[in-house]
Amino acid sequence: MGRYWLGCSGWAYDDWVGPFYPPGTPPGEFLSRYARVFRAVEVDSSFYRAPSAGLVRRWAETTPSPFRFTLKVPREVTHVPEAGDRDAVLRRFLENLAPLRGAGKLGGLLLQFPASFRVARQERLRELLEAVPREFPLAVELRHDSWWTGETRTLLEARGAVLVWSVVPGVRPPPWVTGEFLYARFVGDRALDRFDRVQRDGRSDLEAMRRLFDAEGRAATTVFAFSNNHFMGFGPGTTAALAAVLEEPAPDLGAAARVAGQRRLD
Image 1 (tube, helix red, strand yellow):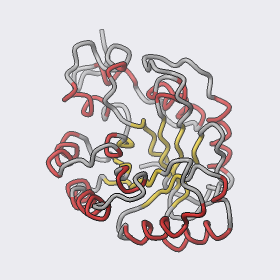
Image 2 (cartoon, one colour):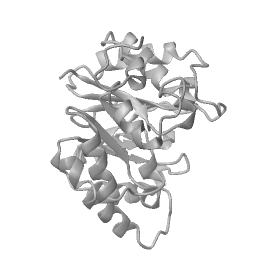
Image 3 (cartoon, rainbow, N blue to C red):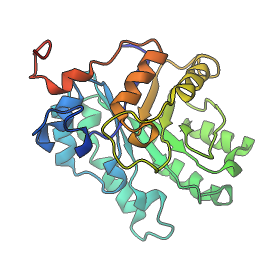
Image 4 (tube, one colour):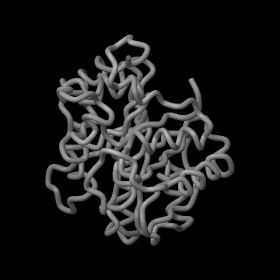
């Protein structure tokens, strides 16, 4: 099925209606149309609110096979220092993913930490790595350079959790391979607030990531790579540019606007 699973960080953006989804597309059709173009997605909304089992089941039923979801672990787990029901939130979140796991569509989970989360809280990271059962592939995004130590690498390797290779201003994680797959995120800054077209040239970062995939990450047979709207202004366009840099088949961006089964727009 190929090494690369490329997609965007989310699919439900009003600014995509017109340039990606056809005008008038109801939000309930966004995912099924997105899945005509890309074969993976990073669920951003789960960071803000854990999805119900019913919603997860609809995701599984709405998408073709093969298709893969990675999901951000809710922020109550990673961002709230003293959340009293944090363990219960994590447990319910994992339980509700059963429909994706049963359909073979769960690519992995993402523990995304803020820049304020530093190596002084290493024990908290250790607790979370142990709290997520090993049957869930796990990626960890750290955004402070205090983490770039041999001890951190050993901690991730012991769990088989991969360090996310993030492209974020002011952050440059080391290209460690600490698990069985790779996970890259093209995040960008927050200066852009319209997401209807590519507005920046990020090719140099895309090419630098390809060099890492080909060198340090060459042994990995599975690579997830996701584009945030903020990186170049338009997630689908960024993902198409990344596919070109990787010499992967070009995603057919027009497929999201066509009637299912239609070969092209007249």
